[in-house]
Length: 460
Ligand code: SF4
Ligand code: MG
Image (cartoon, rainbow, N blue to C red; front, side):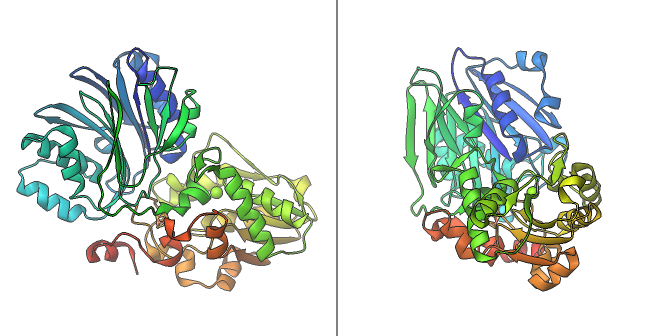
């Protein structure tokens, strides 16, 4: 999911949130919503669809306020329906609270029990609403906003980057492992105008300046007095999702002090070092495989070319909820360039193989277009484990590399050769401590404990 928040009295906060969400559209395409705060009043609008389908000028005009939060949803828990769209809104003793969540809690069973004991009601099926209700129930038991939020987080385990609106201010929060990203920006010359966004591309679009990341286990509290910071977790330890870096986030977003474009170029270079092959051209699978393909070409000296053209108006095939929708989506999305490919030995670079459905179709399309050899290079290791922290890589039995060797996968997708980037190569290319990332979908080494029952739902 994508989350966004802005505290900017006097500005058209709903419109700025709309633009922010527009830039974060790649993080979720099922539903979108904005909640604007005008003193004690909250104006909320959310619906199914893309940001541009959900909002128009007249809807945005109905969302006045000094502060707003927004969300684009990609469902990992809870079904894909309007009741699960965010922001979630709850009534409390101190007024309304609106919450936008990116990530996935792993202890919802426990949290549900806890909330039921406190006589809370649920209207949706998401973990995100449970966080909002947990905070609301702490407020109703007599706590102030900050205290209430911090007590509620004590009952939450898993991945959560949150943007929360209250009548007095805006909160930005990351879980103690900072699995999902969240950044802070400033806008205009006024020192008290702050923006929160999942990625820096959400700041760029409204001309906001990137200040810094919200730290793992940090809460920032933005009010008319400015921004205050609280490090509330006793043991914060960053475990940023490496899949954000290799695939999910936009290449123009900055993570770990560089654009992901630069990181992905390095992955491609490293991939060429690790598994060079003799070929005539290197192509990338648009869009996510392109930077690594360019890196591969730079390192290997093999000519880079465009071999597949993507229809920009088809969404991320993965984000469609069913396999059949996914498969038909793939056919609509990519078209090979016959005159580039005819008679050529082709290296095709992609960022990942998850189920193997996309790759098989692409390889067939390249051969149909006349490629004489197809060598696939993947800028991450085999995905062998499901994600429980908010990326929809499905259950383990859907993951092609969970049961098949690289040779078997190569055969199944129909390539002449297949090689993946090493785990070490992927992490060393970050230039940071490998322990500061989650890479569980490549190793099965989950940094946040997953309850047995939850594990059984996705592991073989
Ligand atoms: Fe990211 Fe994979 Fe960890 Fe999930 S399991 S948070 S996708 S690195
Ligand atoms: Mg891709």
